[in-house]
Image 1 (tube, rainbow, N blue to C red):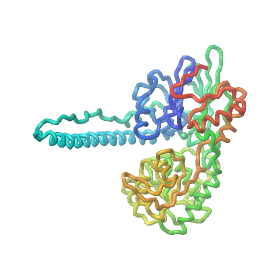
Image 2 (cartoon, rainbow, N blue to C red):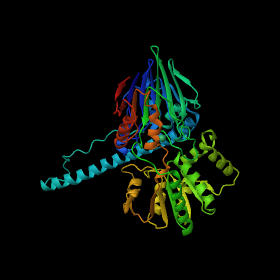
Image 3 (spheres, rainbow, N blue to C red):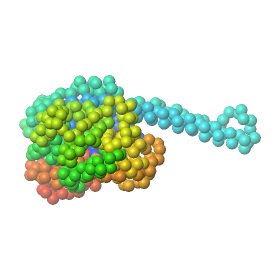
Image 4 (spheres, helix red, strand yellow):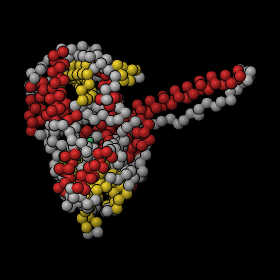
Length: 496
Ligand SMILES: [Zn+2]
């Protein structure tokens, strides 16, 4: 058996791990790297393996940092099966289509920027050559000595909607707990990872040369949280691949964080004007926030504050969530039933069009607006921020992880002025950070899930974590009896 790591080896995005076993090549995840635009483009443009040689893909869940390069894989010649749970494959449709749209917009932006760079370059050259000619007392009509910047080739989107459609045709759906064969000698089953709808950890059994080897891959391993069922405990295995997002950090309890959100709603209720803006990832976090708001509105008997979800992807994702009650815990099923009977205190409205979204800008409030993107780097939330951030009647609830360099991180860091859509804005709004909504296991959760497996495990690989998280986790796991814990680098090959 061989493992090759092609992503999420120096951070938490771009998951992509290659398994060679029983003469077959299986790809675990095919995720997109997410970070600064230029670096993302460079890192996402290529594969360091031939997509035509992959026999099958096994996908743990729909988040773009795990699934976002699948259409590129298909565009470059992969035509095998993509195995996932039915809820994951349902979520992949709107998410990959949304990603294709973002690729297109990105390419348009980069081409426009390059064109402007060329035009500006030419203007500078013209000014320079005019000065030069004046200095030499040359005639104005003499040809310029300077050559303008040569045009660079046009930037193309990484993939198009057509590629997404081709990709969706390759999905093969499975239920949790059911073995399926992906090649002779290789069988797999999914288990509930309690991370987002449909998210799984993967158990893989390989028979070669009369020997059976078991491999478990955590995908993104969740934690007990509202709505979703708790993660199924991991199974003992010879080889483990684990995420390490919060390998050295512990989350505050979810209940405390919901209290914080409740206090923000109460402030809005007392003020009787203004907005509570909640930037949230469209899939997972938005639904958790709605669920928390439902409880808060009921407990505090608030019925007159409208809650608007302003994200087309979140609308689609929420519809899909409602179609998969098999993924919920009992309280969520009960709450869902009440909302369908119209008995909930919370009245949620989803915006339909861009015009509908723009109308919210002028709403005096009180109003709660949940909108993407979660790290405030793009999407409709930027317009709401631009309108609201200069007012003391606005509160911004930061409910997710904010990566270095993002607008969200600058707000968390308390910068007094920020740039939004090309304009400077003074931050007069209140910014409240609520850290407990995470859908990942924290250090204690990961140690609790992995430690019982130390005796059987011959090799444990840590991926999907910054080094300041995965290296301390590796140390803790060695202390708990794991003989071999590796933190692979990009393209690292391991023979087992
Ligand atoms: Zn995830």
